[in-house]
Length: 426
Image (cartoon, rainbow, N blue to C red; front, side, top):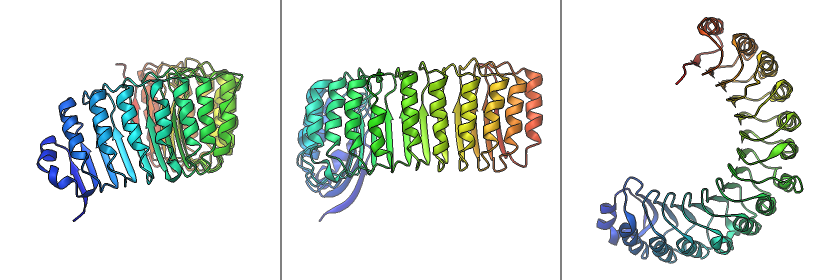
């Protein structure tokens, strides 16, 4: 008799239940608190071989010191679970090379009923040899609605993600797509080919793309132009381009893309540690004016050398986001953030009448008491503001200024119900 659901978080429980496990349709195995190594992984593969009735399998094996050989055995064991519709595999922080990953991907290619697939191979030893197998694993992706792939901090390059781009062209039913290729050797050619695949996913409502610490932009080929085809239905966009060498031209192209995402309600954008000039930032910030449905915005502009004209554009863009409720601005290490910059930013925030929660990070800026005071004065217009967090470590706001700021905020207590001011140096 088939049983619906079972959760295991200890290896000994798995061993004791090895005969009953094959009767379950939904199986959750979370061994992240234990270091089972190859011996435990081999025993696990023996158990999984008989699980022919599974429709859902969640397997959490991160930080287990598993080798490619043991991963291959798990891959072979999974081939018998042909009825899987939901598969979640987490092999983060192991010692898996190409052979182990290939055998797992080979099994995934057999699952013709998959609608939800998550593969996490972050921080292993996977290289471009797995590219063809990864493409093959998505050959039956016509039913996929949810896809999450994490190959961060591996030895992959343009060839690898180009193959993913080809595979995504077969996944036209996707509504959720999450891709993490950060800390990799990928460049503009690979990302451009990837974007050709994402272009086919016209039903996407959520897109998470992490290209942190890569080299993904060239002035000769804008992959943001290709993305435009899938932006019509996007409501959630998480884009991490920190340390990606995006440059000013790339920022301008990003701005043009964002301007077309008129249905966005949630935007997380990380652009820190890039060489972007005022024109590039202005293009991004002014594009926010088109995102009239935006309710949650996270902007990480750490170490971006923003100047007054950029803050003016940021304030203007935010001022048009009338439905904005949750805002986080990370302006750390922007040494040109001055009194004038704070005024420009505050002028825009004054129009965010629905703002409820505001977090502002100002560590190591040139801003002084007068600038922050002007910004806080502007927040008086945000009559729904409930939480305000100001992080101002290592700014030139001295003790006297801090007391004045607290007094100023105390007068707004009918608006701000919770205020956090952090200013101590570590």
